Length: 210
Image 1 (cartoon, rainbow, N blue to C red):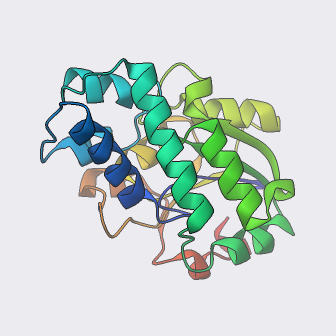
Image 2: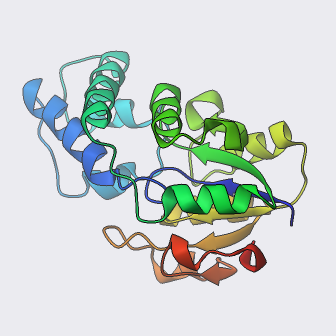
């Protein structure tokens, strides 16, 4: 395995709560009503999918494009103030880049991906990065991982994932899956069963794992 594809949200950056709050704020400001299942429902959805959910299921009085733009603007503003990197994130990227070709397959919008990697100072470490807005379907469909593999020119490799839909997506793409379960939104047991290895954190990720 000479290639590793990272997820972004929940693997390198502790961002699920930030996405959650940004979407809640948009829903509240535009006549919608948040529901308890919304957070988990939207986990892994692409930026073409979750804005439709916000409009159709939560009732925000905006178009999906307007929802997307408002949430991304809030995310970028928040990240410029504070980027909530997970412990060991930059170190893991730098460590694995010494021995592996790195890719990234994320449900985040392209501007968010670029800002995170630039702020981390690791943009140059990734040979290919893909947003699920650039493919047909979001996770748990394999599209974003398959596109990352295509851009990397590989037919096998490993994926680092934290979420239920992410694990399913990477597995469906035929990748070896290393799961670092998200403590805020832990994957279900059936999803974890698809992982080839389960680690407690990024510091536990070593060359031999990937």
